[in-house]
Image (cartoon, rainbow, N blue to C red):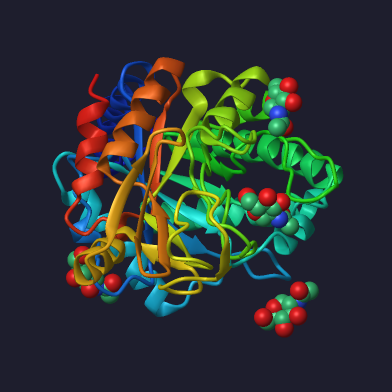
Length: 379
Ligand SMILES: *[C@@H]1O[C@H](CO)[C@@H](O)[C@H](O)[C@H]1NC(C)=O
Ligand SMILES: *[C@@H]1O[C@H](CO)[C@@H](O)[C@H](O)[C@H]1NC(C)=O
Ligand SMILES: *[C@@H]1O[C@H](CO)[C@@H](O)[C@H](O)[C@H]1NC(C)=O
Ligand SMILES: *[C@@H]1O[C@H](CO)[C@@H](O)[C@H](O)[C@H]1NC(C)=O
């Protein structure tokens, strides 16, 4: 300490003050306030970071970065560097202040790269050090891992090693730099056992409790273009005919002993579409023959609203599933609106879980759903 020159000492003092105030803020969020997250797709053309209303969220995620598939380090090119810096600068300038994380991976990236990265201590170490370097360089508050999804029991073991080593390294870095510890989160399957195929694998819940700040359970994509035989509520809160639902997913996480405040419920700001076989059979589970309007059977909430208005679609609130669908002719769209989101959040509150997040914020152009969500869960 005695060796520090005055300007540096000043900086250290400043950062201590900063560190105390932000960590107080953080503990305020985690012990009293819900985690209200928004993923921002960096490729969105008509929704700049400045469009994120920080009065409605506590955390915003930059989607996505991908490490190099051989070194497992991030090679950030110049346009990406600009975009990362722009994201954190824009959001940190806003009032109220919200935390920023960058998310690694995503559905399009797939699972293979993470499976290889997590395989050995050395590759995990390269990845971990690079995530911290990127976070600090571009002024993020944390890192979110979006490995969709671990495919084998071995992947889950390696995932556990990764979380353990990641937390140790982040702790060490915070201690040696005097900066607040980086937040670590992960986007996961909607329930603790991944049931996409016959290979049994379960997330390492004890390690999640110990090493992650929270998980974003992706409570959507229960039905979609991979099964065109019938319409479906892609993010049903309840399903009278199966266990594939948000209530079952969240309850399963709780049964597997995740700390409730670390469980964050996913909400989709997009719908999934089908083409009905017969326009007079239009309920949930009605026979279908193809994808409906949108991009390969997917449509943002903003576009669903436009579609409904333009085609004078009939909109139905489905009470058994707590979801909404609309249809016009043979075009059918299942989605969430402000009302279904409100009921889901009320359900999440009764479970006493950590909060909710949206994929993705650009689907709610006028923040109608996000505002309803935020007002539904006030401390
Ligand atoms: C930076 O952010 C502003 C405000 O959100 C946006 O209008 C602009 O396009 C962004 N620039 C880059 C390079 O991402
Ligand atoms: C790594 O990425 C490159 C470029 O996308 C690809 O050609 C190559 O096959 C990948 N290597 C592995 C091991 O996946
Ligand atoms: C497709 O969805 C329908 C209705 O949800 C279901 O009965 C059927 O088993 C599904 N088919 C496959 C191959 O998953
Ligand atoms: C749903 O889960 C319950 C409890 O875990 C189980 O008893 C029941 O058989 C499951 N139902 C279906 C349709 O899978």
